[in-house]
Image (cartoon, rainbow, N blue to C red; front, side):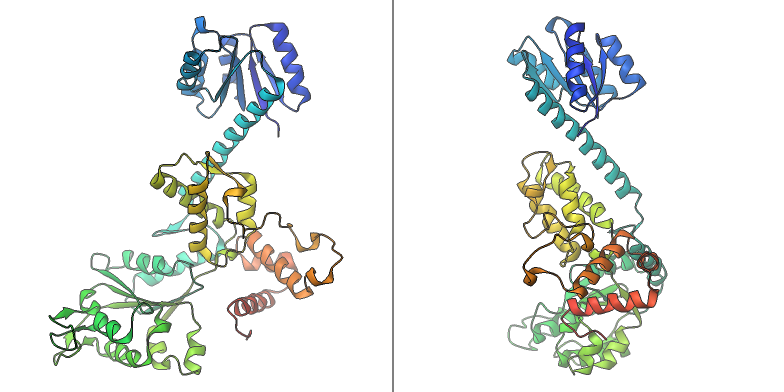
Length: 459
């Protein structure tokens, strides 16, 4: 790693010697003899790092000027007057580090490299944050890959109508975020958004939660209770994990969706409701209907508009955008000085398949922020399951002698196809051109991989 170094040193002979030494070590070196020359050099061409000889009688004006005018340029202070007071004063003036003469060249080289890494980290973080701010989103959804742009365009159209929506996708892809965004962008935004997880409670309790109950309807029903349908009147009811709803309750839900009227458990009067229903599942409801685990008539009622969420592995560079957003949120929450990710950490995250999708990514970043001891998340702060060294292409897989660890032809093909799709930002048309196959063939293969991942036979 090398960069542009500005040496500020009054002693011309020493400055020449240091410039020659660091030039041999790969630095592009400029020399200034005094503060005026240094500021002029900074004004002409901003270096990556400043290494400045400081004398107490001249104060720390250079550090203060650089900190005020070029805050992203780190200044390493070197002085023959090494006192604790001067060190503290230098750091307060904005110095990156403080070294006393005589300085070991290896120590100075290491310090300058750390300063350069810090500079480049700030540049990468700034760029990622700029991309996060500029990335098109929908509600709290973030991403600029082709699959997400297609999703936003669809959600814009769907939000304005009252039709039922079925959101499908792998676990952790953000189905509730989509449901909330649909509600917030709809004419119902001023009324309630009411979510419930249909897999989180037994049938009788779920029925009571949805439809309400009257006093004495069952044991412990000591008072009337308003159900979620009535609470969501005029707004949106989000039925998460609808595929896990018991069959008996599915029939009652279908009746409410058809009649738009709710009867509390144990009650004898119905109440009219105006509710938009948004349901979500990671299951294949068509297959569940074929196997008798889900009512086909309820599926037709819920599946007026289907919204399919792409898995994170098909969203290309969105991984790094989301990681930076999560890092900023969590660093603030935990009061940690973490700014960004090292290049090695970014590579590991970009090359990982993220089977747990966005939820897994957020948990990974939270772990890294908690464990990180400095201002940069490194590869060792990430979970061990993330790859430490993944070849850029399956064609570059190292040669091994044990045939038991060699990938099959199908595995090599799948790995290459998924990497090309990710590199194209999820744009399947572009990926098909790169791969030299037609779009239908690519879609068929990706659907087969998706089915295999879910443990199903490809259709």
